Image (cartoon, rainbow, N blue to C red; front, side, top):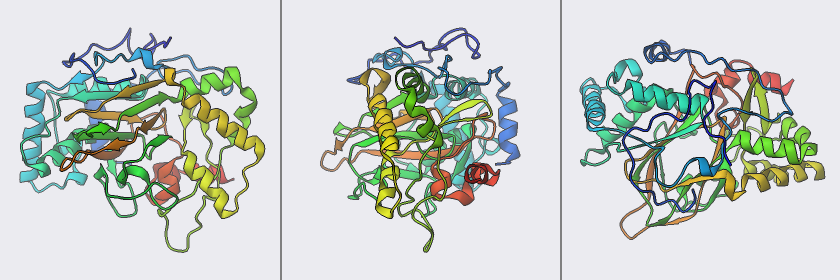
Length: 389
């Protein structure tokens, strides 16, 4: 079974649950000084984390299995009435000052009553399982602009809000817009099943505005748990996964720019002695259409990785309800989504943020570097240059 939370990671056991004990429906279990100030405000002391050794199993709170997160939602953090009121009041104050949602920062969106919960959730995302779920976020009331500002305001306490695509979107709507999921289109505007992958920046958050009529389950898997399985069962594939792969940039590139990254991105990496994961299977395989050779040994490593990721016992599965807010550490956890069907006149609709947390100890390559390198802190700090050397 899963090992869950462990001593030595800033917690003597699983954190106390706040609020939500309702039954679950899941079938399977920069350099911005305001953010440095926020980390100090929430007393986020550095963790005494031992450097990991590549090729050896990882044994810490980032390793878990689906059974560690039961369907009863006992691990979900509920926002209470005082927190909701504080978040909405802060949003109204920011709106009155003319602050755009993408420009909100912790200093411009103070949440003293909610700060202890924010810090607890931050520690789960950074030092624990790598994800957390909040319930009860205020999505009703008819003023969507206020909801969006409130979402960005709370999100800003977990990192700087970053652009997500070359259309310049900072707050992205995940909903069906009739687009496919192929070499020229990312999957968030389709109803398609999305295989396990990770996104750009440290943290991706989703706010459920409207669930699907059927399907659309969110699934998560621990990257270190996948790594451990391969270390123990198929270590012959580690070299290829550590070396990494080229990625197709799809439609997220400048005209005339090469369609494929000129460098390889490791699937498993260790930066600063910490584990890092970067995975998007389709964008690896699309490279073959551009003349990139993927050897038989590399294909065997990819198949091994995908077979482990798809093991049902490793994943946690959740039905996102209205007002649920999911936070996922992109460097630790892969996420997926089942295909879904909308009801007439009621589309599944989520709002998504990518957050760059400069207080995080983890930083490595990923989608920001492939699609939006000018906005990537890893690229700016020389990380891609070192990969390319």
